[in-house]
Structure formats: structure tokens, C-alpha cells
Figure: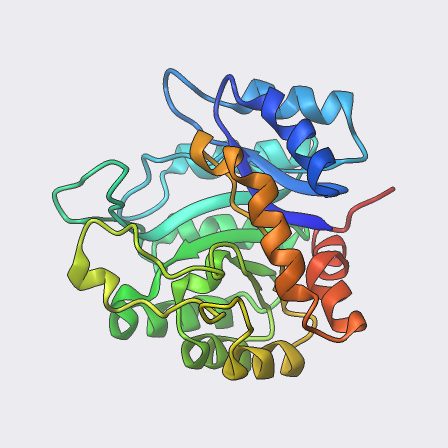
Length: 283
């Protein structure tokens, strides 16, 4: 299996390899979380140096972008892709509702506008570098956000966009995105459970349910999506904080049971083949 999305802060690197080995995960797309006192950047780079075949690195993930991407962020990200061991742009929080266990903001969300001038500057630069970009947006305000992201995907058809957690959306919403924009691929991280961590229950109610039932059986509408778009979905855990890394083995085992319900070629595509293609992993 290839974990298409994971992230760490400082003092977390020693969790990664043991968790992967115990779970039988051969490779991982990994990036650092940038916090002033607990940045994981040095540890991500150290893991790559020590185990180069196991990791594909994304640029570090900041938490301070609002309204538009800052010019400094764009410059740092492009420089990192040109001068470091980075193959993709790590998760950028475009529409991220406050979580019950995280920072609470005055607006109830972190938001970067897809039409931002520096957003387009960054994506224009990525065209020349063939680097996928991981854009996080949750569907709690679909009517506001889908037209804007649809326009963004359409403006940069030669950029591969990775959509984490399927936006916590419904099968119908994911179908709309995939049918409209062939340059979007989806990670299935956290879609094995209902999204129950938003600070606002009103926003939470707008999100789609899990893609499996209470017995971990893939729902018919999701199975249809996987079969219709076999090259557009990637297994991922989004292990990021201690509580997710502690549960890493259990999360992977659950996904093995879920993917085991699919025909072997499709299961392999979701489990690792799509990720290795998207991230252009080199052995």
C-alpha cells in the first residue's frame, strides 16, 4: 500500500517508520506541518535522507494563509520545488472549517479564495514543474465554493489537483467534481467514518457521510464511483497528530478490509498504483 497523504510535526518522526512497517505500508506522501514551535520540516527531510525509497515529499503546510496566498508563501513554495527533494505541493487549506479539537477562529473557518491573484501566480508556476498540488476544501458551503473551484480547475487543466478526504463530500458531489474536471484526483482519507469533528454542528450537517455502512461495506453509490473512475482515487490516512498516528495500524487494517471488497485490479489502483503514478515515485 502507498499512503497518499500523511503529515508530521516535530518530535513525531520516530512514529512513522514503525507504523508503516507494522501496517505493511511500503511508501508514503509526507509533508511537514509548520508551527512556530513545533515545525516538522527538519524531521521530514531527515526521514527522506535516511529512507529515500519510502517517501515522496510535499512542501511544508502553513496555517497562516488567509484571503489569498501570500507572496512569500508562493516564493518559498516554488523555490522548494526547484531546490529541494519535493515532488508536490503539500496541503494548502482553502476552505477548512474549525475543528472541535483545533484552533477556533472568529469566522469559523480558514479560507483562501480560489480566485486570489497569488493563487493563480503559484499555479502558473506549477505548470512548468509538473508538480501536483494538494488543495483542501470542504463542502460545507458547496454553493459558494464549487463554482470557484470549478473555475480554478478549469483555468489550469495541466495541473494535477489532489483533493483531500474527498472534501468530506457526498458521492453525488464527488461525482460532480470528477465528471467536470479530469485533472482532479481524490484521497479517501477519513471517508471510512462520518465527519464528526467540526466545531459547528450546522456546518457539519452539510458534509457527506462515510462511504461505508456500519459494517464497513462500501455503499453502492461509492462503489459505482470507484468503478467509474478507477484512476482517480487514492488510499490515504492523513495521519497528522499523535491521536491519528497512535491509530495508524487500525486505520490501515480497516482500509484493507474495505478495499478487499473490490476486484483486485481496482483495489490495487486505489491502494497504491494511482498514488505512484500521480506522485511519479521513482524506485
